[in-house]
Length: 356
Image 1 (cartoon, rainbow, N blue to C red):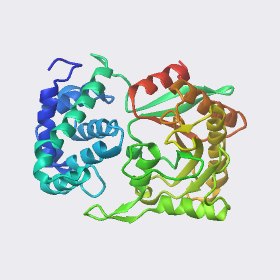
Image 2 (tube, one colour):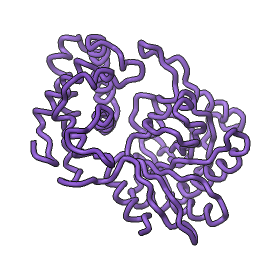
Image 3 (tube, rainbow, N blue to C red):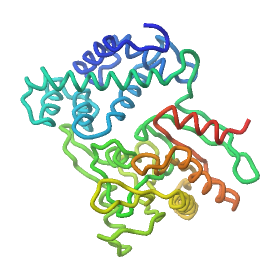
Image 4 (cartoon, rainbow, N blue to C red):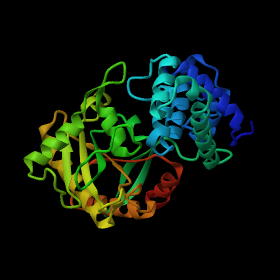
């Protein structure tokens, strides 16, 4: 396989090996095509070629599955590979049975028909991820510290290029939400769904045991008299982080930026609401910080509104950074993190914010 390219048939072969082995046994399975694809698409600083680790292969698989867009396809893919909560150590037969249930078909029919389609779609996404990478050299490291201009000074910003549920060691994450603070189902692919899923507690058989973020948002609405009614766009609600606390994440700041369109599944997001929400989240971080030991210091911002909200990456970057710039000019001094899933917005952030 030539550097910078990916052979669909070889990747599909490796995906079938992953389906049999499951995520827990990635290190025990030889996956040359997936290792090469991970090296091409998600090269980390200091890693290249055949030296790509099993963790990088898992990173690539999760990113590819995340790109399937939710619904039955993504849910079946997560069960098939053992990515759904609580299924990491499931035998292949149990994962296949659950994936078949997603489509409402027998295990045998799923094996002969839908399973090939699911794995084929994952392979397609891996091919696209590889095509986005340059033929040589790094596209952008999965973690990179850049120096950005804010107000009249330069500030360090850590740029993360990976799914949000892989984030570690950041005190608070700003979570895009709608004005009803209604969380999407945990199996969806959005930032808020991923964090809801990661914050929840699950049994070994995938049964939901606790859904703390959902419960805390419901309590927040009751305390603030907004149950059943939308809040003003730009409002920020703070909750705990549930199981994410084990990863060093202590607070979630839910930013109401998406206004549902009546009678549709679509949303409207205004850049001004994004700016107001980010400013509110940074102010909330400063307010809450002294209550914690150690104090809250770091905050991670996604590109709010750039998904189903319809904002372009450029519009979201400008709206987010306008709030950062204003708050830092007023003396705020958080440790800033930005997170995106794909190379395109990462390149934009580097071009827009990085100061040589």
